[in-house]
Image (cartoon, rainbow, N blue to C red; front, side, top):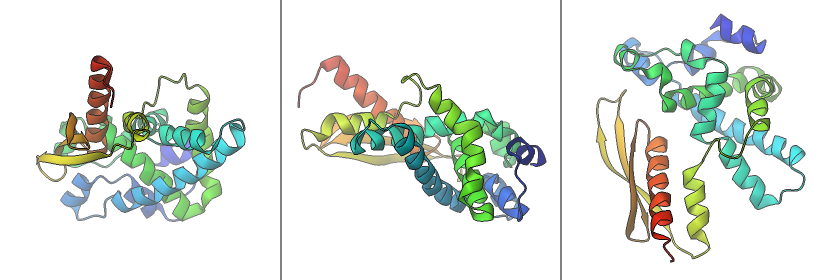
Length: 226
């Protein structure tokens, strides 16, 4: 964890916050520790704020709707994973025995959650200005290199496609399997009452993205008008 702080030129006043940010629920369950889930909540909100400020200042020709779409794209799970990889965050995560053996350090959902928790921990320990050390090192450069094909947020694309026709999208969990620290979720997305796609993932977010991707492919194949 010292290497992670050095990478961003950070020094935590409360090192326990950093440890908690990197503690997956599988490790927390095995060692009676607090997991990073509550810090994810904080980090998610903080990332929304810094991304909104960045896009407002950089994308002066975009309107509110465009800015909202771009923010969603740059804080979606796929984007968070890239930010986590840019600082080798997986190397520092504390994982339970089973999660370690099953390749959890490279799992998208775990990396995305850990990055949000890491940001949340920095905010609580040092404030918003210190969060910018992370953003300026691994977030903003990746946004600048974006080629419009990366960080695809399939849920947002699907929502945008159907909202003009006043249709409603509903995501439903239809199956959960595996132990609490290593679950697999199956989620279906419905447009009104029509089943549009089904996806699986190690988190609900991941499963929803897969379901939305399948729905978009179905619409493209059928050139469906609704």
